[in-house]
Image (cartoon, rainbow, N blue to C red; front, side, top):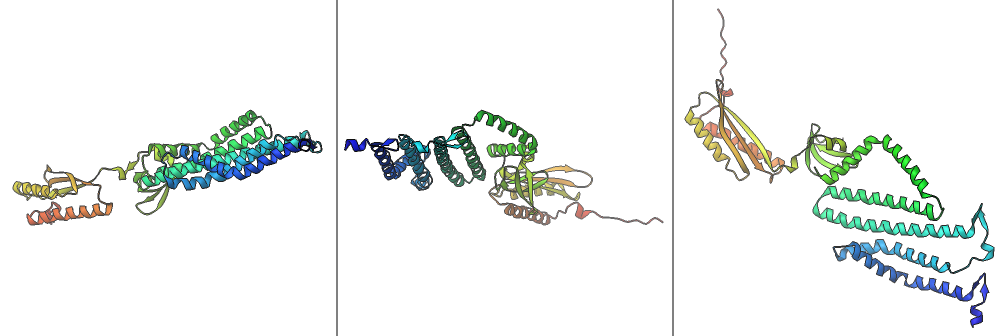
Length: 364
């Protein structure tokens, strides 16, 4: 039996063949269990929340590439014990032998599967962060997560390509990086404005001067932010038009975020006719202050601000809470204005414009 196992076939003993193929068969059988165990360990590392509903999508993303990577890795280690037969030791192209080509292919396959596994981990991390951003209702974070997910995917693919060039083709990566930096500098100069807008988008994402859904005033326009992109911000204006503002202008110019206001302000200027007496003015001012006692009004000011040859001026300024929608606030302003008009009618006081008489004289 020992002589049979030591028998040489194609430069390798039967014992080595049995060990190699036995290792591969065992790896094929247990690879699923090992992958699930390692995926469970990775899940505990990457998922700090520990919620069970994250586990299923994680396993779907990780187990398949992890299983293939482990099986391929074991095959490479097992076949490394075999000596290449003499008839396979030939030159494929120029000075590249079949053995060197085989090593390059296996290295490239291992690198590709490893990068694929890393991309799946990035997708899972983005899945958790997107869920948290959705639950918090922050649209900016959702867009930022999507951007960085795509960014890291591209970075991993480029990194994998560099590893393949180095380990499979034995290319000097330093020369490649030097050439890449020169090309990158040329592209940066050619796309200066686009890069400025890209940097401005990062400022918007991190500084958060406004978010998706906020009402803003910028560049003479007022509207609701519908989308924040990497180059520009889309706003639906009050006239229902759809404008695109470069992110650089959104950052460099003065921007009024109406949604972030703590109160809404309204002003009333009453120009009372000169026929009104001091007692009437005192009574009107006091009754307007009573009107301002509404629960929606948080602070208010009512006073006789001016008097002169044309009219007595009563200034009313009040701040309403932001609990109302814009339409409700407009309706409330109308209610206040009508209440003030009704008050003037009850007290027999007319506005200055209403009491103006125009006298036309004819010269003889």
